[in-house]
Image (tube, rainbow, N blue to C red):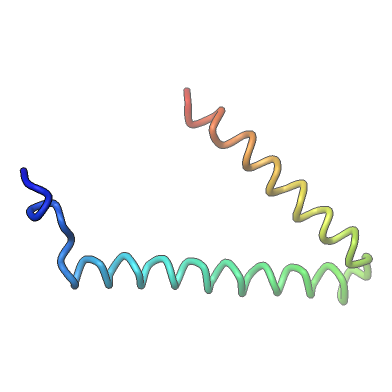
Length: 70
């Protein structure tokens, strides 16, 4: 196949773009709600809530590639 044949058409490109946009929007919305819940409903400090998010992201960054390798 030539490079020209491997190129995405506009419909496919916009489909991938829409999926990525929706995924980032929904992740941001849920993350904002969880942060609000932790700080205003549970009453923990913003630093503790941020630490929870940081630990979860570090755990995902280390654990996901290890699990995907098996």
